[in-house]
Image 1 (tube, rainbow, N blue to C red):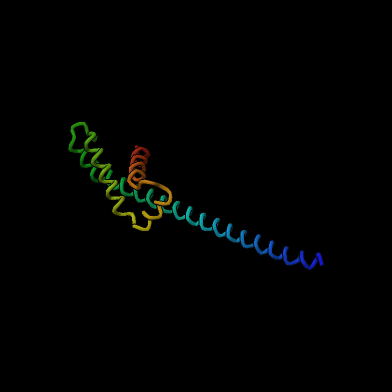
Image 2 (cartoon, rainbow, N blue to C red; image 1 turned 45 degrees about the vertical axis):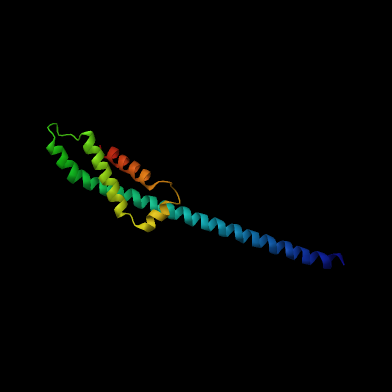
Length: 124
């Protein structure tokens, strides 16, 4: 009589444990996919920023430098270039990438701004 009672209880416990394990595995896979998508979005933004900044450096920054007696950018020109770069990057990044980046960051503008500064600093 004890074995007849024990088998259904063990079956129920095993079923519950399996269901819990599958639910946890599903959560882990979803979290990993979300993180990979967010990382891919951040990489896309970084590459777009690099391309935009290099393009502006070769065209607009070069023009500004030629207009100045000392051949250097003044603060207003640097600020204008940074704002141009931020606007161009935001315009070029697809909405899907913007949505995915929101999984990892609070402010797209702050991210792009810091990426612009990084590319400029790395280029010096």
